[in-house]
Length: 89
Image 1 (cartoon, rainbow, N blue to C red):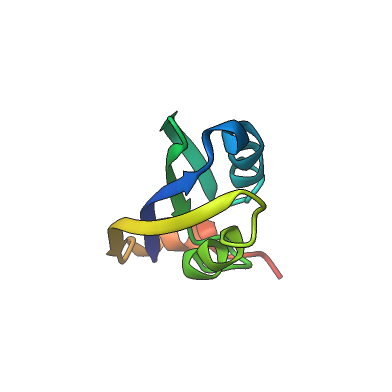
Image 2 (image 1 turned 45 degrees about the vertical axis):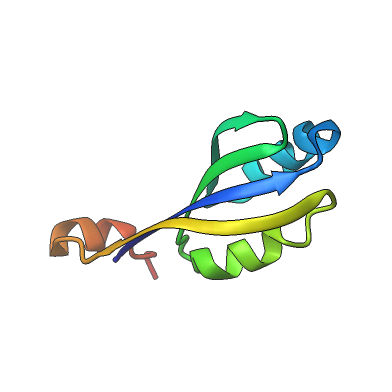
């Protein structure tokens, strides 16, 4: 399954750099744009954590004021692509 969430993160402009670094440290997170304390990110499921759980953890980053879900995409991948995403035991 592919699960991608697009979010808008609000922070104080003077804290944006540290918040961006913390957001990018999440395995499934990626910052795409930022301006004046507004940060656009995408968050994807990882093998060990759902995107929704990551977003909840992101609320705990010092300087984060709010995180708003603005986009959600969820779809089944074909069997071949899903097999590539499965951990090998």
